[in-house]
Image 1 (cartoon, rainbow, N blue to C red):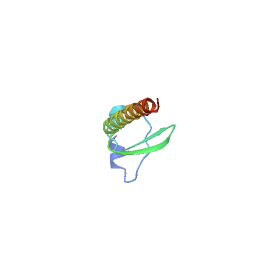
Image 2: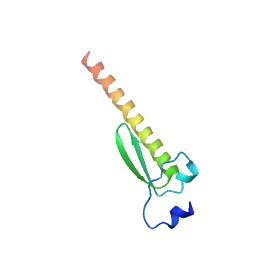
Image 3: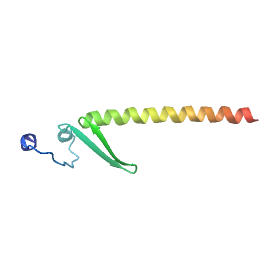
Image 4: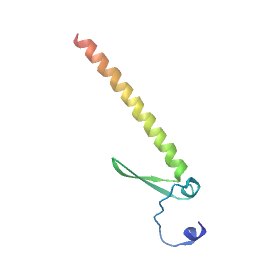
Length: 75
C-alpha cells in the first residue's frame, strides 16, 4: 500500500479486500446501470449505497400508496 501512496499518478485497483479499499479516495462502481463514481473510501461508498437504497424504497412505497389512492378514487 505504501507504494501506491507514494506513486505520483493515479492507479486502478480492483480488489475484494475491504481494508485496502478503505484506503482509497475514490470508488467507481460498475453495475447494470453503468459506472458510478463516489468520493471517499469503501465504507463511505457502502453508507451512500444504503442511503440511496432506503430513499428508493421510500419513493416506491409512496408511489404505491398514491397508485392505490388513484385506483380507489376511480371506483
